[in-house]
Amino acid sequence: VGEFVIVCVSVQKPREQVADAEALLDIANTLVTSVKSQNNEGITPADFITSLLNDFRVNGSIHGEIAQSSISWKEVGITVSHIFKRAPGLCT
Image 1 (cartoon, rainbow, N blue to C red):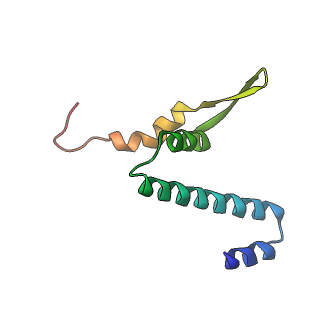
Image 2 (tube, rainbow, N blue to C red):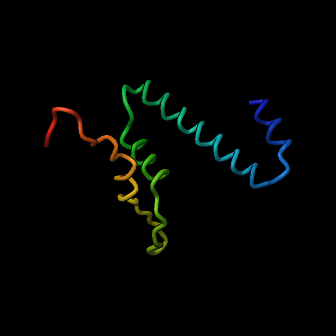
């Protein structure tokens, strides 16, 4: 962590600092989710939904005082489509 702080201080452009901070936050969130899933014998539904929203959120609208977000299901499909590739000897 100390080395990361030194690198952040040496950066001259604020945009680079923001990008570095966002990357560190993503790494920390991934680590926390991984530790939670190991301790609880799996990922929780709340963690799954939070991950979907973090990775595939489309800004929604505000109804009353409640902000609503949507999920880009097209992007989810593109991201997971490699799982459903053809395999030799298998046919659906």
